Image 1 (spheres, rainbow, N blue to C red):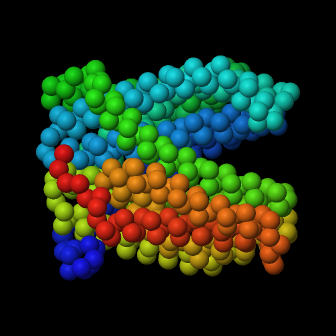
Image 2: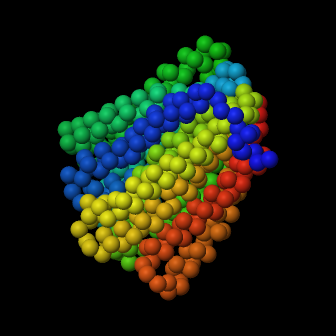
Length: 446
């Protein structure tokens, strides 16, 4: 009998509410993150082209580093949730403490490396003149906030593991408002230019980190959990995080390889791809919210040994993810001719983007399933499987991109590129679904 068959997954009252209580605040917190960058862009954009280009380049480097460290949240959430579900709050807090310390340690190392290498990174990316100067300024000032950024990632994972989705939303929202105000004052009031925008974000991130510490430290003391990290705890966090980082690297490689193919097809194709990819990322926020809820709830129920609830949650999440993908796909298909003119006046780019959006619309149900199952297996701390199959999925995707790049196919290269990306998504869906249905990832207990 299949693991996720209807007969093996009884209905549990309140399951829907549990998911929504975590997913809805997670969606708000996820949206708040890109708003930090939007605020920087809007404020710096009025300084001049060189300033905007420099800040944009510095932001791209910084976000790449932070994106690779997202495992700090993804590994901390299930580790804390599992102990919380087992009824061992002191061990849950200890796991969270070690995750935050790991974030601080990695942040310091990356900050020093980033400060020293900033001119070389900017030069390698092709910037020169005033643009390069502003990019280096932005990067070097931003490095002071990197330890706080990574500590915030881990602390967010702690609270989500404790089934608290509301506090990360409030902290992220408050941080966004503070960041926007500080950036405006420092850029224009203090006349610090691009460096002022970076400094405002640094201050906001450190204040967010302090808020999280003010929330967590009293709880640790109340349960007699020491504030210093343990070697075993750091190694456990690093081991799990290392596999998740490899998973993230495989995703980044797939995205960059896709950009390489469309870039070779010409500027119009690249511009249209950027538009389609923007909508892909926007829709991913909603699906990521379900994935975050899955991480928290699956970890908790596995810690409690509630296998039937884990099965019910997994089955429900799969239906929700696929169903939400159907809805977003239908809406996106209906708007495919309406959206491109809002972003570009070039008729060629509009036409290409419209066809790309139609292909993306067809892929949405698969996207929904992939994002949700990714969250389920992260919640089960099945990081090794995710990392290894991430590499396998790249092996499947690479030949598809080679065909698009080298074989003269009929029609537009952008359409075939997104068809190839659909093949990558299908590969991920197959490997994730195979694992979910077999159930080998259900390690119960703390």
